[in-house]
Image 1 (cartoon, rainbow, N blue to C red):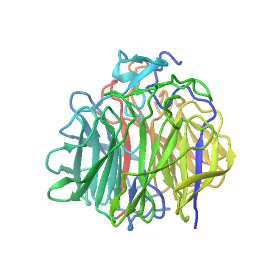
Image 2: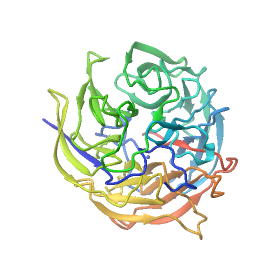
Image 3: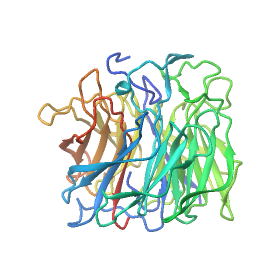
Image 4: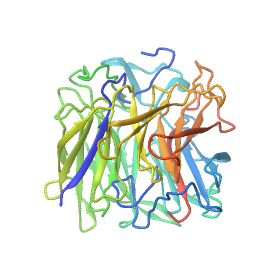
Length: 456
């Protein structure tokens, strides 16, 4: 059987989900049978708005460079959000460097103006009754246990552990292997995996899978200004997401564009798992024209059909041959009108996929079979207090879709979470809430939103 892949991206972008500066104006649920960052045989996705009395919560980190914190927000029975609390991760956050022009790092921008500081998805991850957090500033991973009866109550399990490399920015978990893996995208780049234990926390397992990205620490991410992405020859690529496949026999990594000195301008790497061991020899695939592969997940109720979001180009349907792990595109469809669309989630309620854009304050709904745009939802609202400049992560539970928007000092806008109700069906999302967590300053970046549902 072939793995089928739906690969979505945008036509034109101002950045590879790089820091976005509004004054310059130059995304998860874990449903079953999907390539996702968290693969669990017991994972399900509810199609109802929510189950009365079901314990559920939303998590994100503030990625503070002084003391990183994980924020736990209550999800009410009707799917709207209520105030929660926050916990120190015991580590510190960091920001990748941007390039205003190719080869010119821009490290002087205020934290509150940085969009997507880690250039990734799944920097926070939840599975079973755990939450893990990347601390890119001190190269560690934190693990929390969740109280399933009250999931905004968390406990740090031991101290943060070394990520094995520099600048950890994306995580994936296999319930079959009881293994968490972290990709590091700094100077010492590569993947380290860990066994997971409720008492002892994370313990390194297997060898560090070194990966020559030729990056700095913190890493430098290019600003892509056109479909052709005028990169300098030595612009280095970045890890952007990790995923196990549905049967947890392989791990997929997405990597953004590199310059002419690199083999691929944006590609996927599939690491086979043999006898419970993740191979250090991946198979690489590149789709002609793509540059900024950003996030992947397997679609609901499918046999290995998966979705990869590439910010720069159009939508592709392709296949991965499991005997060779090579990705081959078979068709394409454009997703136009976006600027830095890097996060996606599929709703079990509507079946549609919803995209978040770091530079445009809207949510885009696309077809799970073609990737074509169904509707755009402008979420700027004076009535709901939303003057955000964009959204940089997205998740779904039941009939609700949630999008995270970081704060902005230049526009005097606080970090907030947009809530859409999609119960009316395809193309009929309703904007119901703009939630502002208390206690976050205008310089809060926000990163890595995840949703927990008891028993999922």
